Image (cartoon, rainbow, N blue to C red; front, side, top):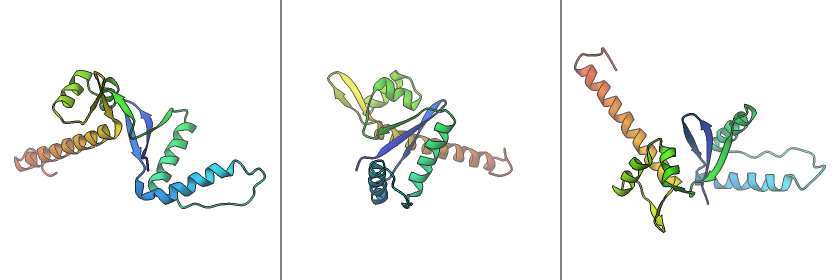
Length: 153
């Protein structure tokens, strides 16, 4: 099963929405239905498929953004990105990204002399980075309350 990542363009960064492998059966049924429905002209009746909530929200978001004239791009989570593309995804400079790669903070591999990073590794790094930032902010707020700077957190 290949995870699919949808990128809904939102300034200034792209927000990934992944479909989990646990919803494999419903996604396979939807795929079969969509593949066969266009081949049967004059077909009448309804066919219901139970969609996982994550897939429903993703499809709804895609349709809403397309209706609003926004660009939507779908890609595999296993896609390889160049160091420049990876830096753009994270919103950092290429030099800063290379430092993160060389320090082993983000897994990468080389194709010849060029560094390549899997999108799924960038998504994992960004989630960890954002969680760490959130925890640091919460701790700063708690410290400020303890010091009497704020009444409550």
